[in-house]
Image (cartoon, rainbow, N blue to C red):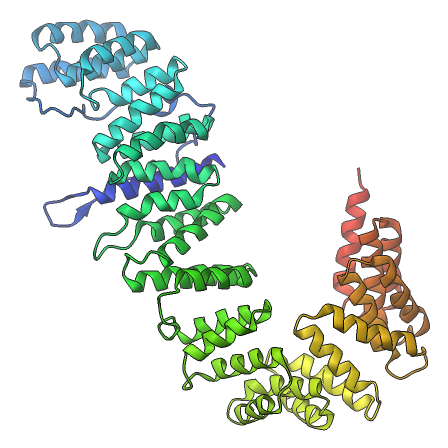
Length: 558
């Protein structure tokens, strides 16, 4: 966690420095470097004196003249003595210099560093405060170290963040102070930074520092609100996009949530160029899809890009959002989105429009349009066959399931052949149209209606009936989905015991084990899994059952 937080602190330091970078002689931007991520990782239990190096040129807000060569040489000798651990000798040299050049920032800074070397934090604080006056940069790093050594974490944070507000060039060491001192209490860090940011809302370095405690406290929406005003620079990529990449690399739930918020914040920021907004939305959508969270992402997508015509989203993206809306039961919104794309849509959008219409009913006109689409785009063949199966047109459905199964590259090839076998093996069975209706209600999300239809068949049929096995399997899975594991055991065990040679029997055994697992009886769950492996060692689900047995065995080990 410390390593991840340091990486984020380093990223914030780079972003702050980039906003105020100076141009080098060759015209390229010279950026301050982040903390060395290969170095030992400091944590909240660390002390600043142990992790912040006492080196670098002296800093001051007021300009100051360089020391004469002789005095500069003597100062360098004093610094060398300090680095060798000879603090007393260094102080003697510095005392001579101070009498000749009193209050010079370079000498003052080195004197404070010498006190820190001796771990005399009180003396270092007195000296730094006496010399600083209103100069918030003079010996700021050294004063923060001294205050931290005295256990005054809040004051150390205030000194570091005040220096950062005065000069973004202090971002590297100030971000490390924020990481160490703020990491002890992120609420304290937030409370220190909040009034500073409110007084200087356009201060880039402060705003970016403020995002760290907000993110760590789970207030990512507020963090992005703070970043938004400083993120609207013409012809410059929004910092929130770069920050989202850094957060995703942390690979924690909180940081990932903050990365999503950063992307959605860019998508909804109407002050930004539309290309950045579309990129942020697309990136958030892709990540949501990878995590199986399309439904929530679709709702957010519509809200953040409400003012951007869907035709400019990108056809594949609009279709994906429409599909997620349709699958979450919001068919009307899906149809509206697809209608906004116009009639000259892609085959994918035409297919998705048909799916959205099918959720409202099995209209013959919709099935006819699917038939037309399947003639020019084979990927629609599965959808056409399903719609015909749902509507009870079994002969047409069988022909199209067979054709859909002929394409081995299709993701629906296996399911299509399974449907074809079902229709061929039970041709003419009056139960088939009801099975089609059950499949339709299940697809459109009406689990109550699907279960009612299946239960009516389950109650009326006998184990000797042709499609009893299908009905029993569906009854068991429906009860499991409805969190009724004891009720699921009745049809599942009846199928497993009555028809042990049926192709559904291995799955029925596995699901019976799942039911006992849901009940909490691990011994009986393991018994069913092991019975499944003993009877069907080469079944298609054997590998998954073995994994579950191994998991149960590990749970029993001390």
